[in-house]
Image (tube, rainbow, N blue to C red; front, side):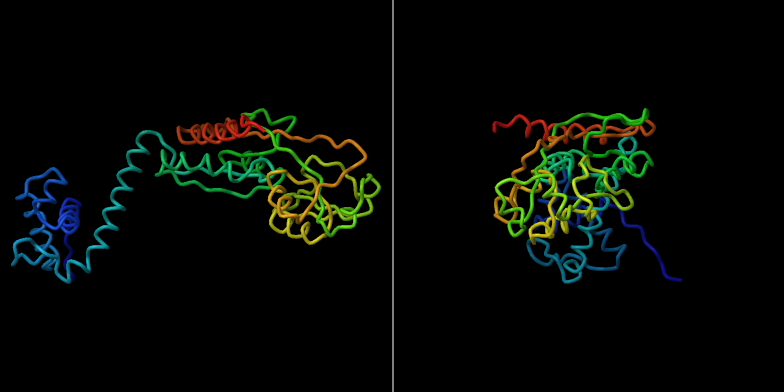
Amino acid sequence: MESRFFIAPEQLEAFEAAARSGSFSAAARSLGKAQSTISGLISNLEIDTGLQLFDRSGREPKLTAQGRALLQDVRALLNSYSRFEAKSRSLNAGLEESLTLAIDESAIDLKQLVRGLDPFYQRYSTVSLNLLHASGDSAAKLVREGSADIGIVLSQGDYPEDFDFRGVGSCSFVLVAGVQHPMAQQSTVSSQDLNNHLHLRISAAGDQGSLPENDLSDRIWYLESYSLFMTLLTAGIGWAFVPLHIAQPHLDAGAITILPTDFQLTPYPHGTDLIWSRRKVLGPAGQSLIDEISQVIAQREGEPA
């Protein structure tokens, strides 16, 4: 039967510190231990593994080939042990193990979102974050079903009674088409012009017509994501109402243009809300995530035009 041995984290820590610093005395100083303790831990590690990890024939110990072969694995184990300790402390403190965020790209500039996620990660690095693409009403459905903890959505007039929400900003929509589209050549565009051409709309699967748009055309294609959506627009296929934060790069590149209409367009701009269910109490990480996202959106809203 194959024998097994137990390696204490302190042994691995002493080995890694000595390999990194180049001496047992330097390793002892960095770990706040006596040199004899470091020497003993490494000697016991060599006995337990049956390997000579350091060559002690010179003035300072040097890693052997066997020691070099194990060093990266030892560092990986120490990193895993550190993460285990941090997560254990977090769970004991009531911190969530994971959070799921459902994101409607129409409601928020993803660059803004990243600015909120970075400080969240720096503070809660042990919390696993699941980011879900959720166009149209699907973000609210995921929160309602308990499949998402927090949703970023376009404001709705009426949320279910068990929902909490926070209004965090607004986003503007613009009516656009590709520069190759026939309407791009017109000085003004009427509602009849729009009715004569293909309308592209974003919606979740099986949930057509979720965005607050007037049915200005009988010819409608529904898409789930803005990737293919914008590819079709820039190719001159169809027209659409698009959030300005998504349209802007394509406007700057001259691939699409804002259509000048001869009628009033409503209800743009549209509000952005963070939503969560009262049935599932958010812990400190969830509350912090809401605060971080709210803060970056508020900063954006407060920037001078």
